[in-house]
Length: 185
Image 1: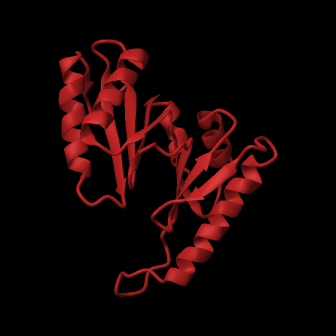
Image 2 (image 1 turned 180 degrees about the vertical axis):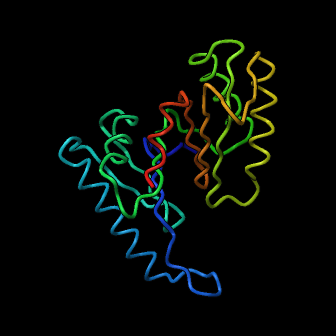
């Protein structure tokens, strides 16, 4: 099975909940359309190769770009969107398999980080039946400690992003100061 290509994982605000906590499907669809409009409004002129794909969740879309994902995330964040809540730039997409995720993150860490650097891990699992965020966190932490990296939740130099979207997982490692592009609200 081939992995799907995407450069951004974009999440929308989930503010349309009724008193019982369940989501109104029509409101989610309206929010998703509004969120897609926000992304297109910011990126289309700068990136005519922009392609937005649905995911298995109404409040998450995948964006394929012809430009730099970190720069695109900055542009979205700086536009002060109302519906887009989170934008995660993706460096690499792999098959959703714990061994594949860890192997690729270790490879990216050796390329980006220096021995002794501190890191934290942000995980999100959307539409996967067997893999849990805690499994990913524990395995990544253990593997990176083996190559002399230090887990630090309070003041890390690096933030590692693992975005599980069904059968595909997006990965990235950003310096902490760069990671501010990920949150828009």
